[in-house]
Structures are given as structure tokens and as C-alpha cells.
Length: 128
Image (cartoon, rainbow, N blue to C red; front, side):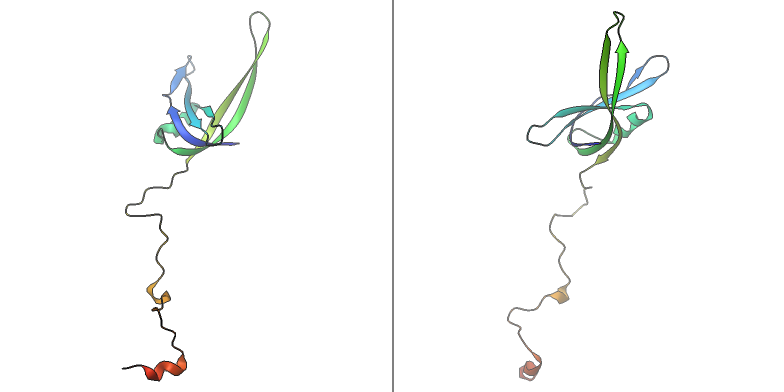
């Protein structure tokens, strides 16, 4: 599955417990009629994937939905969901110095001068 949108927030990496579990969260705002603010977590070695991204960038994140069950001390069963990212891509084109959105100009030999409707029989009428 994938989520596309604009980066709203990137948190610092958090480390938990004696085993060194690492987690980093990013919030992406979707671009639809009713925009959603989706929090996605990157865990362990995937936390480093967020190092090259900034707030305001357009991104596409590949995700997995995770669910787990937990029984509290009173014996009640609770369920938790998380969205884990495993890949993130920049959707904005790289800035190339001097480039524009205009289409490249065609080669000069594709142009014909205006009013130049000469055919083979007219070649003798040229003044030179």
C-alpha cells in the first residue's frame, strides 16, 4: 500500500528499552477533498530513510498495516494498529539550474519561413 501527500512533520528518532528499539514518525497530509493527516512510523534501520526529507516535500511512502493484540492486567483484550513505512520517495522533480517547464524548441530546420509556398516549378523565379 502507498500514501501520497505533503510532509507536515518529521520527528526525531526515539530509542526504547535495553534492546535499543528505534522509531521515527512522519506525518503526511494527503491531497484530496478532505485531507487526512496520516502518521507513519519507520522502525529500526528504516528510521534513517527520513534523514533526506523535509517539511513541505511531496512524497510517496510504501506502508504496511500492523495490528496487535494485548491483554491488560484486568484481563481485557485490546487491539492496536500501526502504519509502518518501509520506503519513501520524493515526488518533486529535482531542480535543474536554468530549466523551465516550457517544451524544448524544435530544431531550426523544422521551421519554414512564413509565405514560403514554393514548389519545384517556382525555383526559376528566384531573384538570385
